[in-house]
Length: 486
Image (cartoon, rainbow, N blue to C red; front, side, top):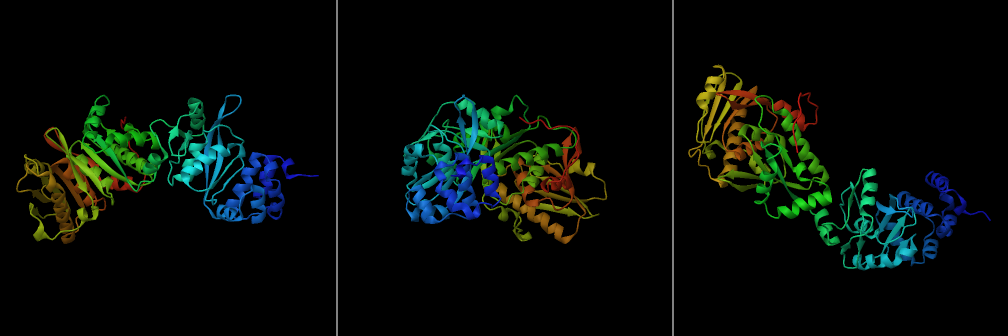
């Protein structure tokens, strides 16, 4: 008598997914355990994806589980995942698996010989489930990838897992790690095993966290010096060693991904460094699915930090670190809207003066010990309008006041923009680096203008705000030269 199990796996798959077996699903289901594993896998996948299925009582009879558990299985969410396996020839490859969360108290699978291992996983999860594989597999290393699929909501998408799991959620190492790693890399994946991750609970706590505190450093140190600067910065951030370790193991984010080093900034255009900064930030955010609170340390001139702040432009909380007397001091910005919120002129305690001429405005920020107003006046042409901003205690700003000073300065700029439509803003800084960064965050990229840096007795135009806007909007900029990064 003719049987569905006689159909070649490839042809079975084509017939099934074209819908030509929809009226025969009961007959196919009766032969479920006679079908090859690949056909079993495709049948289950088709049922879950297309939401068409054989009769519930027949499925319960074939799988030998209660009908209510089949109903739970049909209604439960499913997920595809990959399992690294080593075949009898000693060669490793990736096998597709499919998990279904929710099957009452039953375990439904096409790999009944693995039930004794699956029962330990059920004890940990405290509920039944479905597990199906496109090949017949052996051993216990499938347990970690299966557990991740069933237990963790947001596993890293570029990784596959291998390991044994016990009823308490502890993760144990398995054999053939190097072979499995090569198989994963061949498919563009990373392999995560028990190294550095000891339990499913620890893995879930990290992967399903609402937010991740991530260190990021920009430094003008060279390729041989950035690592010591990085380690020094991390020593001031809470739990940084654990964070950096998990970022690398679980998300594949290394120290090199979290550091931008420029070496000595050139006397010229800095846009390429801005592009690298934004690329690195967005890559980290993508890997962590946007659940990032950045902790930023910036070693460089204030003009550079202002450009970085414009690019950063976050609506989410962040912490920026002020470096003073060999120590890092965190400045938390929990409400970015408040930083950007406009203050009344009467609330602003900064000293400022405005010389209004044409529609180009030179903004001179003098908050450091040394004043730059004279040098700026000598540099700009006489027709340009000039805003000079100072603080009554410049050079001695308190760390806890810097964010409010940045907000005041941003409010002043907003007020002046309201009073007159300036065509261009030209920024000159003598200020703390973190102040300039926060001012950049608040000022944004919507007003055209330029940023200048002092070199050898004069100023040089180093950044065009329209270029920063283009970077944020994802537009390509044709620039010569390459940025050195770790």
